[in-house]
Length: 327
Length: 139
Image 1 (cartoon, each protein chain N blue to C red):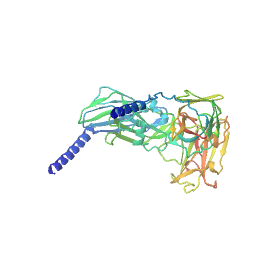
Image 2 (image 1 turned 180 degrees about the vertical axis):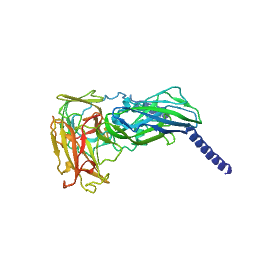
Image 3 (image 1 turned 30 degrees about the horizontal axis):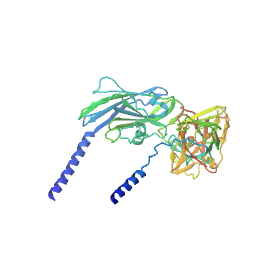
Image 4 (image 1 turned 90 degrees about the vertical axis):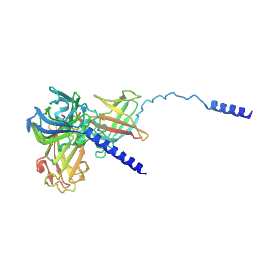
Protein backbone atom coordinates (compact mmCIF):
# COMPACT_ATOMS: atom_id res chain seq x y z
CA UNK A 1 0.00 0.00 0.00
CA UNK A 2 2.82 2.34 0.97
CA UNK A 3 4.80 1.56 -2.19
CA UNK A 4 1.65 2.22 -4.26
CA UNK A 5 1.37 5.71 -2.71
CA UNK A 6 5.03 6.46 -3.40
CA UNK A 7 4.60 5.31 -7.00
CA UNK A 8 1.56 7.60 -7.39
CA UNK A 9 3.49 10.53 -5.90
CA UNK A 10 6.38 9.87 -8.29
CA UNK A 11 3.95 9.85 -11.22
CA UNK A 12 2.58 13.23 -10.19
CA UNK A 13 6.09 14.65 -9.80
CA UNK A 14 7.08 13.37 -13.23
CA UNK A 15 3.98 14.97 -14.74
CA UNK A 16 4.62 18.32 -13.03
CA UNK A 17 8.25 18.36 -14.12
CA UNK A 18 7.26 17.38 -17.66
CA UNK A 19 4.72 20.21 -17.78
CA UNK A 20 7.30 22.70 -16.53
CA UNK A 21 9.80 21.50 -19.12
CA UNK A 22 7.21 21.87 -21.88
CA UNK A 23 6.32 25.37 -20.66
CA UNK A 24 9.99 26.37 -20.60
CA UNK A 25 10.66 24.85 -24.03
CA UNK A 26 7.77 26.56 -25.74
CA UNK A 27 8.34 29.93 -24.10
CA UNK A 28 9.34 32.58 -26.64
CA UNK A 29 8.13 36.09 -26.12
CA UNK A 30 7.92 38.78 -28.76
CA UNK A 31 7.15 42.43 -28.16
CA UNK A 32 6.92 45.63 -30.18
CA UNK A 33 8.83 48.17 -28.12
CA UNK A 34 8.27 51.26 -30.26
CA UNK A 35 6.51 52.33 -33.43
CA UNK A 36 7.91 55.14 -35.53
CA UNK A 37 5.06 56.51 -37.62
CA UNK A 38 4.02 59.98 -38.65
CA UNK A 39 0.67 61.32 -37.45
CA UNK A 40 -0.75 62.24 -40.84
CA UNK A 41 -0.12 61.93 -44.54
CA UNK A 42 -1.49 63.23 -47.82
CA UNK A 43 -3.91 60.89 -49.56
CA UNK A 44 -2.27 58.53 -52.03
CA UNK A 45 1.21 58.73 -50.51
CA UNK A 46 3.10 55.74 -49.15
CA UNK A 47 3.28 55.60 -45.35
CA UNK A 48 6.63 54.41 -43.98
CA UNK A 49 6.46 52.69 -40.57
CA UNK A 50 9.26 51.33 -38.42
CA UNK A 51 8.70 48.79 -35.65
CA UNK A 52 11.38 48.03 -33.08
CA UNK A 53 10.87 44.45 -31.99
CA UNK A 54 12.29 42.41 -29.13
CA UNK A 55 12.49 38.59 -29.14
CA UNK A 56 13.30 36.44 -26.10
CA UNK A 57 13.87 32.71 -26.50
CA UNK A 58 14.12 30.04 -23.82
CA UNK A 59 14.90 27.20 -26.19
CA UNK A 60 16.21 26.68 -29.66
CA UNK A 61 13.62 27.14 -32.34
CA UNK A 62 13.29 27.60 -36.07
CA UNK A 63 10.49 29.74 -37.44
CA UNK A 64 9.55 32.57 -39.76
CA UNK A 65 8.94 36.09 -38.47
CA UNK A 66 5.33 37.26 -38.86
CA UNK A 67 4.32 40.93 -38.98
CA UNK A 68 0.70 42.02 -39.34
CA UNK A 69 -0.82 45.46 -39.75
CA UNK A 70 -4.41 46.63 -39.33
CA UNK A 71 -5.36 48.96 -42.17
CA UNK A 72 -8.43 50.34 -43.99
CA UNK A 73 -9.47 48.02 -46.83
CA UNK A 74 -9.43 51.08 -49.08
CA UNK A 75 -5.63 51.11 -48.98
CA UNK A 76 -5.28 47.69 -50.64
CA UNK A 77 -2.17 46.96 -48.58
CA UNK A 78 -2.39 43.25 -49.41
CA UNK A 79 -1.72 44.12 -53.03
CA UNK A 80 0.86 46.88 -52.74
CA UNK A 81 2.29 46.89 -49.20
CA UNK A 82 5.84 45.72 -48.44
CA UNK A 83 7.74 44.64 -45.33
CA UNK A 84 11.41 43.97 -44.62
CA UNK A 85 13.53 43.71 -41.49
CA UNK A 86 17.10 43.88 -40.30
CA UNK A 87 18.54 42.43 -37.10
CA UNK A 88 21.69 41.35 -35.37
CA UNK A 89 21.01 37.68 -36.07
CA UNK A 90 20.70 38.16 -39.83
CA UNK A 91 22.87 39.65 -42.52
CA UNK A 92 21.47 42.37 -44.70
CA UNK A 93 17.86 43.31 -45.36
CA UNK A 94 15.49 40.36 -44.95
CA UNK A 95 12.57 40.22 -47.33
CA UNK A 96 9.01 39.46 -46.24
CA UNK A 97 5.98 38.63 -48.33
CA UNK A 98 2.20 38.71 -47.95
CA UNK A 99 0.82 35.50 -46.45
CA UNK A 100 -1.63 34.23 -49.09
CA UNK A 101 -5.30 34.22 -48.07
CA UNK A 102 -6.37 30.85 -46.74
CA UNK A 103 -2.96 29.95 -45.29
CA UNK A 104 -3.76 28.49 -41.86
CA UNK A 105 -2.20 30.27 -38.91
CA UNK A 106 -0.31 28.02 -36.46
CA UNK A 107 -2.55 26.90 -33.58
CA UNK A 108 -5.36 28.82 -35.24
CA UNK A 109 -7.89 25.99 -35.55
CA UNK A 110 -7.70 26.18 -39.32
CA UNK A 111 -8.32 29.93 -39.51
CA UNK A 112 -6.11 31.91 -41.81
CA UNK A 113 -4.01 34.76 -40.46
CA UNK A 114 -6.36 37.69 -41.23
CA UNK A 115 -9.34 35.89 -39.68
CA UNK A 116 -7.35 34.68 -36.68
CA UNK A 117 -6.00 38.19 -36.08
CA UNK A 118 -9.51 39.65 -36.38
CA UNK A 119 -10.84 37.18 -33.82
CA UNK A 120 -7.91 37.43 -31.43
CA UNK A 121 -6.76 41.05 -31.67
CA UNK A 122 -9.92 42.70 -33.01
CA UNK A 123 -10.56 45.99 -34.75
CA UNK A 124 -8.03 48.15 -32.90
CA UNK A 125 -10.80 50.52 -31.86
CA UNK A 126 -11.96 51.28 -35.41
CA UNK A 127 -15.71 51.79 -35.41
CA UNK A 128 -16.45 51.33 -39.12
CA UNK A 129 -16.33 47.72 -40.20
CA UNK A 130 -14.17 48.28 -43.27
CA UNK A 131 -10.73 47.29 -42.01
CA UNK A 132 -8.52 44.26 -42.53
CA UNK A 133 -5.47 42.61 -41.07
CA UNK A 134 -2.67 42.09 -43.59
CA UNK A 135 0.03 39.63 -42.53
CA UNK A 136 3.59 39.15 -43.81
CA UNK A 137 5.97 36.21 -43.31
CA UNK A 138 9.72 36.44 -43.64
CA UNK A 139 10.79 34.59 -46.77
CA UNK A 140 13.31 32.56 -44.72
CA UNK A 141 13.13 30.50 -41.54
CA UNK A 142 15.55 31.47 -38.79
CA UNK A 143 17.10 29.15 -36.20
CA UNK A 144 17.54 30.89 -32.85
CA UNK A 145 19.30 29.40 -29.85
CA UNK A 146 17.77 29.27 -26.39
CA UNK A 147 18.23 31.90 -23.71
CA UNK A 148 18.60 34.78 -26.14
CA UNK A 149 17.32 38.33 -25.91
CA UNK A 150 17.36 39.98 -29.29
CA UNK A 151 16.37 43.62 -29.10
CA UNK A 152 17.64 44.91 -32.39
CA UNK A 153 14.99 43.70 -34.81
CA UNK A 154 13.89 46.63 -36.94
CA UNK A 155 10.90 46.07 -39.19
CA UNK A 156 10.22 48.49 -42.03
CA UNK A 157 6.76 48.66 -43.54
CA UNK A 158 5.69 50.68 -46.56
CA UNK A 159 1.94 51.04 -46.63
CA UNK A 160 0.14 52.52 -49.62
CA UNK A 161 -2.74 54.84 -48.77
CA UNK A 162 -5.73 55.78 -50.89
CA UNK A 163 -6.79 59.27 -51.85
CA UNK A 164 -9.73 59.04 -49.43
CA UNK A 165 -10.06 61.51 -46.62
CA UNK A 166 -10.01 59.38 -43.47
CA UNK A 167 -8.89 58.87 -39.90
CA UNK A 168 -7.92 55.39 -38.73
CA UNK A 169 -6.28 53.61 -35.82
CA UNK A 170 -3.39 51.54 -37.18
CA UNK A 171 -2.32 48.48 -35.18
CA UNK A 172 0.57 46.05 -35.47
CA UNK A 173 1.28 42.47 -34.38
CA UNK A 174 4.55 40.53 -34.31
CA UNK A 175 4.63 36.75 -33.93
CA UNK A 176 6.32 33.70 -35.40
CA UNK A 177 5.24 30.85 -37.65
CA UNK A 178 5.61 28.28 -34.87
CA UNK A 179 3.62 29.65 -31.93
CA UNK A 180 1.26 32.00 -33.77
CA UNK A 181 -1.09 33.74 -31.36
CA UNK A 182 -1.50 30.75 -29.05
CA UNK A 183 -0.61 32.72 -25.92
CA UNK A 184 -0.22 36.38 -25.05
CA UNK A 185 3.49 35.84 -24.34
CA UNK A 186 4.15 34.52 -27.81
CA UNK A 187 3.19 37.63 -29.72
CA UNK A 188 3.36 41.37 -29.33
CA UNK A 189 0.69 43.83 -30.39
CA UNK A 190 0.41 47.58 -30.30
CA UNK A 191 -2.11 50.14 -31.50
CA UNK A 192 -1.90 53.87 -31.51
CA UNK A 193 -3.90 57.02 -31.82
CA UNK A 194 -5.90 58.25 -34.70
CA UNK A 195 -3.89 58.45 -37.91
CA UNK A 196 -5.11 61.06 -40.38
CA UNK A 197 -5.06 60.91 -44.16
CA UNK A 198 -5.68 64.30 -45.75
CA UNK A 199 -7.47 63.18 -48.85
CA UNK A 200 -10.49 64.05 -50.91
CA UNK A 201 -14.21 63.62 -50.26
CA UNK A 202 -16.20 63.32 -47.04
CA UNK A 203 -14.20 62.34 -43.96
CA UNK A 204 -14.39 58.62 -43.26
CA UNK A 205 -13.91 58.65 -39.52
CA UNK A 206 -13.04 55.22 -38.16
CA UNK A 207 -11.95 56.67 -34.81
CA UNK A 208 -14.95 58.49 -33.42
CA UNK A 209 -18.44 57.19 -32.75
CA UNK A 210 -20.82 58.21 -35.52
CA UNK A 211 -24.49 59.00 -35.22
CA UNK A 212 -25.01 57.19 -38.50
CA UNK A 213 -22.99 54.72 -40.53
CA UNK A 214 -23.70 52.76 -43.67
CA UNK A 215 -22.42 49.26 -44.40
CA UNK A 216 -20.86 48.19 -46.64
CA UNK A 217 -18.90 51.41 -46.62
CA UNK A 218 -18.57 51.25 -50.39
CA UNK A 219 -21.57 50.15 -52.39
CA UNK A 220 -23.70 50.78 -55.44
CA UNK A 221 -27.46 51.18 -55.61
CA UNK A 222 -27.85 47.46 -56.42
CA UNK A 223 -26.28 46.41 -53.10
CA UNK A 224 -28.22 45.84 -49.90
CA UNK A 225 -27.05 48.58 -47.55
CA UNK A 226 -27.45 48.72 -43.79
CA UNK A 227 -28.17 52.21 -42.50
CA UNK A 228 -27.35 52.50 -38.82
CA UNK A 229 -28.34 55.18 -36.32
CA UNK A 230 -26.74 55.25 -32.88
CA UNK A 231 -28.92 57.65 -30.92
CA UNK A 232 -26.77 57.30 -27.83
CA UNK A 233 -23.61 58.76 -29.35
CA UNK A 234 -24.61 62.36 -28.77
CA UNK A 235 -27.59 64.29 -27.48
CA UNK A 236 -30.17 64.65 -30.22
CA UNK A 237 -33.92 64.96 -30.71
CA UNK A 238 -34.31 61.19 -31.13
CA UNK A 239 -32.28 60.14 -28.08
CA UNK A 240 -35.42 58.85 -26.40
CA UNK A 241 -37.49 57.98 -29.48
CA UNK A 242 -39.44 54.73 -29.42
CA UNK A 243 -39.75 54.63 -33.20
CA UNK A 244 -37.28 55.92 -35.79
CA UNK A 245 -37.80 56.31 -39.55
CA UNK A 246 -35.51 57.25 -42.39
CA UNK A 247 -36.28 60.14 -44.69
CA UNK A 248 -34.00 60.04 -47.72
CA UNK A 249 -33.36 61.72 -51.04
CA UNK A 250 -31.56 59.81 -53.78
CA UNK A 251 -29.70 61.81 -56.42
CA UNK A 252 -29.26 60.12 -59.78
CA UNK A 253 -26.40 60.41 -62.28
CA UNK A 254 -28.51 62.87 -64.27
CA UNK A 255 -29.23 65.01 -61.22
CA UNK A 256 -32.79 63.90 -60.58
CA UNK A 257 -33.82 63.96 -56.93
CA UNK A 258 -36.12 61.24 -55.60
CA UNK A 259 -37.35 61.75 -52.04
CA UNK A 260 -38.80 58.95 -49.93
CA UNK A 261 -40.01 60.31 -46.64
CA UNK A 262 -43.11 58.31 -45.78
CA UNK A 263 -43.63 56.94 -42.28
CA UNK A 264 -44.27 53.27 -43.00
CA UNK A 265 -42.77 49.80 -42.65
CA UNK A 266 -40.39 50.35 -45.55
CA UNK A 267 -38.75 53.29 -43.78
CA UNK A 268 -38.97 52.08 -40.19
CA UNK A 269 -35.74 51.18 -38.43
CA UNK A 270 -35.51 48.27 -36.02
CA UNK A 271 -33.61 48.34 -32.76
CA UNK A 272 -31.88 45.68 -30.67
CA UNK A 273 -31.89 48.22 -27.81
CA UNK A 274 -29.44 50.67 -26.23
CA UNK A 275 -30.51 53.41 -28.64
CA UNK A 276 -29.16 51.59 -31.67
CA UNK A 277 -31.26 51.43 -34.80
CA UNK A 278 -30.76 50.01 -38.26
CA UNK A 279 -32.50 49.45 -41.55
CA UNK A 280 -31.45 47.26 -44.49
CA UNK A 281 -32.54 48.69 -47.80
CA UNK A 282 -32.02 47.92 -51.45
CA UNK A 283 -31.72 51.47 -52.84
CA UNK A 284 -33.00 50.55 -56.30
CA UNK A 285 -36.26 49.37 -54.78
CA UNK A 286 -36.39 51.91 -51.96
CA UNK A 287 -36.25 54.77 -54.46
CA UNK A 288 -38.28 52.90 -57.13
CA UNK A 289 -35.60 53.44 -59.77
CA UNK A 290 -36.23 52.61 -63.39
CA UNK A 291 -33.72 50.51 -65.35
CA UNK A 292 -31.94 53.55 -66.75
CA UNK A 293 -31.62 55.43 -63.45
CA UNK A 294 -28.44 55.11 -61.37
CA UNK A 295 -27.97 56.64 -57.93
CA UNK A 296 -24.77 58.54 -57.28
CA UNK A 297 -25.55 60.04 -53.88
CA UNK A 298 -28.02 59.89 -51.03
CA UNK A 299 -28.93 62.49 -48.42
CA UNK A 300 -30.87 61.31 -45.40
CA UNK A 301 -32.29 62.18 -41.99
CA UNK A 302 -33.87 60.22 -39.20
CA UNK A 303 -37.30 61.19 -37.91
CA UNK A 304 -39.77 60.14 -35.26
CA UNK A 305 -43.21 58.74 -36.13
CA UNK A 306 -44.74 62.22 -36.39
CA UNK A 307 -41.99 63.49 -38.66
CA UNK A 308 -41.70 66.49 -36.36
CA UNK A 309 -38.33 65.54 -34.91
CA UNK A 310 -35.59 65.30 -37.47
CA UNK A 311 -31.91 64.42 -36.89
CA UNK A 312 -29.19 64.93 -39.48
CA UNK A 313 -25.40 65.06 -39.55
CA UNK A 314 -23.88 65.72 -36.14
CA UNK A 315 -27.39 65.75 -34.68
CA UNK A 316 -28.21 68.92 -36.60
CA UNK A 317 -30.39 69.95 -39.51
CA UNK A 318 -27.99 69.14 -42.38
CA UNK A 319 -28.53 65.70 -43.89
CA UNK A 320 -26.15 62.76 -43.63
CA UNK A 321 -24.43 62.21 -46.98
CA UNK A 322 -23.55 58.97 -48.69
CA UNK A 323 -21.86 58.52 -52.06
CA UNK A 324 -22.50 55.36 -54.06
CA UNK A 325 -19.12 54.24 -55.37
CA UNK A 326 -16.76 51.29 -55.32
CA UNK A 327 -13.14 51.36 -54.24
CA UNK B 1 -23.11 -41.69 -42.23
CA UNK B 2 -25.22 -39.04 -40.48
CA UNK B 3 -22.05 -37.00 -39.96
CA UNK B 4 -21.25 -37.19 -43.69
CA UNK B 5 -24.75 -36.06 -44.67
CA UNK B 6 -24.62 -33.20 -42.16
CA UNK B 7 -21.27 -31.99 -43.44
CA UNK B 8 -22.45 -32.18 -47.06
CA UNK B 9 -25.60 -30.19 -46.27
CA UNK B 10 -23.55 -27.56 -44.44
CA UNK B 11 -21.12 -27.22 -47.35
CA UNK B 12 -24.00 -26.95 -49.83
CA UNK B 13 -25.61 -24.24 -47.71
CA UNK B 14 -22.35 -22.31 -47.49
CA UNK B 15 -21.72 -22.46 -51.24
CA UNK B 16 -25.32 -21.63 -52.10
CA UNK B 17 -25.25 -18.61 -49.81
CA UNK B 18 -22.27 -17.13 -51.65
CA UNK B 19 -23.23 -14.82 -54.46
CA UNK B 20 -21.13 -12.52 -56.52
CA UNK B 21 -21.46 -9.01 -55.16
CA UNK B 22 -22.53 -6.36 -57.59
CA UNK B 23 -19.69 -3.87 -57.31
CA UNK B 24 -20.67 -1.62 -60.22
CA UNK B 25 -20.79 2.02 -59.08
CA UNK B 26 -24.12 3.65 -60.00
CA UNK B 27 -23.74 6.49 -62.46
CA UNK B 28 -23.93 10.00 -60.95
CA UNK B 29 -27.21 11.53 -62.12
CA UNK B 30 -27.45 14.77 -64.05
CA UNK B 31 -28.29 17.54 -61.59
CA UNK B 32 -31.89 18.55 -62.12
CA UNK B 33 -32.71 22.05 -60.85
CA UNK B 34 -35.97 22.50 -62.71
CA UNK B 35 -38.63 24.06 -60.53
CA UNK B 36 -39.13 27.12 -58.38
CA UNK B 37 -36.44 28.06 -55.83
CA UNK B 38 -36.62 30.44 -52.88
CA UNK B 39 -33.91 32.06 -50.76
CA UNK B 40 -33.48 30.45 -47.35
CA UNK B 41 -30.22 32.13 -46.41
CA UNK B 42 -28.50 35.32 -47.57
CA UNK B 43 -25.07 36.44 -46.45
CA UNK B 44 -23.35 39.70 -47.39
CA UNK B 45 -19.62 39.96 -46.68
CA UNK B 46 -20.05 37.33 -43.96
CA UNK B 47 -23.06 39.05 -42.35
CA UNK B 48 -26.29 37.07 -42.30
CA UNK B 49 -29.07 39.21 -43.77
CA UNK B 50 -31.72 36.49 -43.94
CA UNK B 51 -33.91 37.81 -41.14
CA UNK B 52 -33.10 41.47 -41.77
CA UNK B 53 -34.22 41.85 -45.36
CA UNK B 54 -37.41 40.55 -46.96
CA UNK B 55 -36.40 37.81 -49.39
CA UNK B 56 -39.63 35.85 -48.91
CA UNK B 57 -41.34 36.67 -52.21
CA UNK B 58 -38.31 36.11 -54.43
CA UNK B 59 -38.45 33.05 -56.68
CA UNK B 60 -36.25 31.85 -59.52
CA UNK B 61 -37.99 29.33 -61.72
CA UNK B 62 -35.69 27.04 -63.69
CA UNK B 63 -36.89 24.97 -66.64
CA UNK B 64 -34.73 22.89 -69.00
CA UNK B 65 -32.64 25.78 -70.24
CA UNK B 66 -34.44 28.97 -69.26
CA UNK B 67 -35.29 30.75 -66.03
CA UNK B 68 -37.65 33.46 -64.85
CA UNK B 69 -37.39 35.64 -61.75
CA UNK B 70 -40.32 36.74 -59.61
CA UNK B 71 -40.11 39.60 -57.10
CA UNK B 72 -36.55 40.67 -57.74
CA UNK B 73 -34.03 41.30 -54.97
CA UNK B 74 -30.33 42.08 -55.47
CA UNK B 75 -29.30 39.00 -57.43
CA UNK B 76 -26.66 37.79 -59.82
CA UNK B 77 -28.82 38.89 -62.75
CA UNK B 78 -31.96 40.97 -63.01
CA UNK B 79 -33.71 39.84 -66.20
CA UNK B 80 -35.19 36.52 -67.32
CA UNK B 81 -33.08 34.41 -69.65
CA UNK B 82 -31.32 31.10 -70.07
CA UNK B 83 -29.04 29.09 -67.82
CA UNK B 84 -26.53 26.27 -68.05
CA UNK B 85 -24.10 24.39 -65.83
CA UNK B 86 -20.47 23.99 -66.85
CA UNK B 87 -20.93 20.26 -66.17
CA UNK B 88 -24.46 18.84 -65.86
CA UNK B 89 -23.28 15.95 -63.66
CA UNK B 90 -20.72 17.69 -61.46
CA UNK B 91 -21.65 21.38 -61.76
CA UNK B 92 -19.12 23.83 -60.44
CA UNK B 93 -20.33 26.94 -62.19
CA UNK B 94 -23.68 28.25 -63.40
CA UNK B 95 -24.03 30.73 -66.25
CA UNK B 96 -27.12 32.92 -66.50
CA UNK B 97 -27.69 34.82 -69.71
CA UNK B 98 -30.30 37.50 -70.32
CA UNK B 99 -30.48 39.92 -73.25
CA UNK B 100 -27.24 41.88 -73.17
CA UNK B 101 -25.96 40.34 -69.97
CA UNK B 102 -24.12 37.13 -69.00
CA UNK B 103 -23.26 36.35 -65.38
CA UNK B 104 -21.41 33.40 -63.89
CA UNK B 105 -21.29 32.08 -60.35
CA UNK B 106 -19.66 29.20 -58.59
CA UNK B 107 -22.36 26.81 -57.50
CA UNK B 108 -22.59 24.34 -54.65
CA UNK B 109 -25.23 21.66 -54.64
CA UNK B 110 -25.22 20.20 -51.13
CA UNK B 111 -27.82 17.88 -49.66
CA UNK B 112 -29.02 19.35 -46.36
CA UNK B 113 -31.46 17.36 -44.23
CA UNK B 114 -32.26 15.17 -47.20
CA UNK B 115 -32.98 17.93 -49.67
CA UNK B 116 -30.84 19.63 -52.28
CA UNK B 117 -29.77 23.23 -51.72
CA UNK B 118 -28.29 25.45 -54.38
CA UNK B 119 -25.65 27.88 -53.13
CA UNK B 120 -24.54 30.68 -55.43
CA UNK B 121 -22.10 33.54 -54.87
CA UNK B 122 -22.09 36.88 -56.67
CA UNK B 123 -21.67 40.65 -56.41
CA UNK B 124 -24.70 42.63 -57.58
CA UNK B 125 -23.07 46.00 -56.81
CA UNK B 126 -19.43 46.63 -55.95
CA UNK B 127 -17.28 43.61 -56.75
CA UNK B 128 -15.76 43.71 -53.26
CA UNK B 129 -19.21 43.09 -51.74
CA UNK B 130 -19.77 39.35 -51.86
CA UNK B 131 -23.21 37.80 -51.47
CA UNK B 132 -23.97 34.15 -50.97
CA UNK B 133 -27.56 32.95 -51.31
CA UNK B 134 -28.72 29.48 -50.37
CA UNK B 135 -31.73 28.43 -52.40
CA UNK B 136 -34.22 25.67 -51.66
CA UNK B 137 -36.72 24.19 -54.09
CA UNK B 138 -40.17 25.52 -53.25
CA UNK B 139 -42.27 22.79 -54.79
